[in-house]
Image 1 (tube, rainbow, N blue to C red):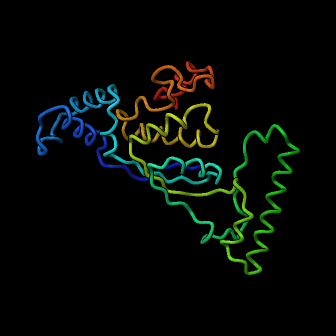
Image 2: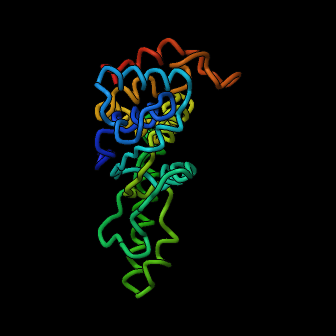
Image 3: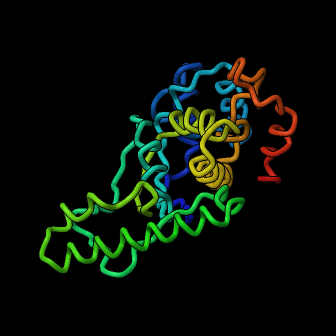
Length: 230
């Protein structure tokens, strides 16, 4: 899996602080960006403490992601407040052996792991035969599995990223999207440390929100998401 931060709103913390300043002071539009860095930091801490996340919608982050499965991308697009551009299986044919994601849990079952790999070899052969016979790629793709790798570009605003991280960094999230979310969070913290200092699973900011489904390891999770450790 490869996750890269392609671009983001320039000076995201400055923009968020300017929006917050407009809400909480009588500053005019021409003065919004003139606040010193210390005041910007205080404003951001204040709005995050209040839960005033609407001002985070003014900045966005675009990621390039590849090497995830279609099973993972199907989960990802459930986050509707985002923009996605995904590699098409209709227009991009896998002429060589298609790449597939293998769940780490299969390593505990060598015989089943081999059957998994053999099945993919059979699927690929059928896929190749269909293409060679002139079947359109848009029809041949019907045999490709959820494990087939995909690539996409995704853009989210900072508010939706906070929501995304609260759900997908949780230990109850599926392992693949959790690994992806953790890489995204690290990139966001590097680009805008004040905005994402406390972003992550819900138990970073209080009691676990999962109720009876709680993993019971909140302290370990908090240590895992200390800025320097992820």
